[in-house]
Image 1 (cartoon, rainbow, N blue to C red):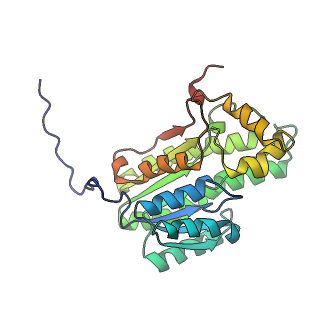
Image 2 (cartoon, rainbow, N blue to C red):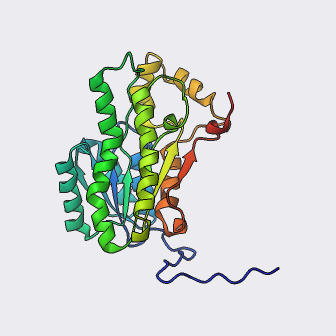
Image 3 (tube, one colour):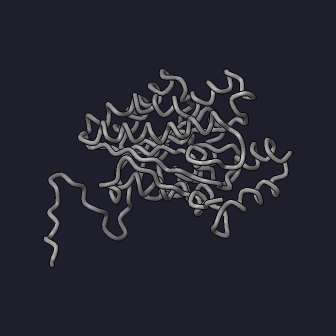
Length: 284
């Protein structure tokens, strides 16, 4: 039996042709676009990778100095970038950054929510203040950026939102970090609900779920928290959970986000793309 030819829906975007940048003409608003240290953090890698594919970048971070290297790398790739300091747990700060992006570039086609950070402890050890700070940092930030960006995308009748979660939101990953795990699980379900709510508006919402990556966070923060500053020991512990014989980094998160942000994923919404080297499918 021969399948009938597919008919192209009215208004559907054309897929990019060979050699055409995958985000040509698009404006990407990226949170956490800096990095805590040298190397490929998720936000820095996403900004550079998107710029390589033709996007104009508006990057925000709480610390502007963290974005110096991101700016240099984006411009070295021939990209255009504007940056702003922004605490994404504050609604007024996000509104100001969104307005600045629209004033500079005229629109927002892609929103990437990349801000995140962990705090150790279960419900007994963790203070109420630390719990709330984690919820605000990892989940409320996603809620607030969407609150201010979604009306713009609705007016355009198009847009792609990529939220960055973590495998800690779906499984045990080696340490008790109940607030981080809960907030990152919340990002996944938040994305699913918003994806369905706004699907008829031409807006897609998906989640990248990175696993045990080697990002600057390992050297600057995680090794101090978990192995007394011994980076090699922490890397060995993390690698032992990964079936593939190497550890990914922020560039792997960036490539996943690129697919979900591009028109290649035009029929993909309300789902998760796991980037963990097979860790999540192990039974042990």
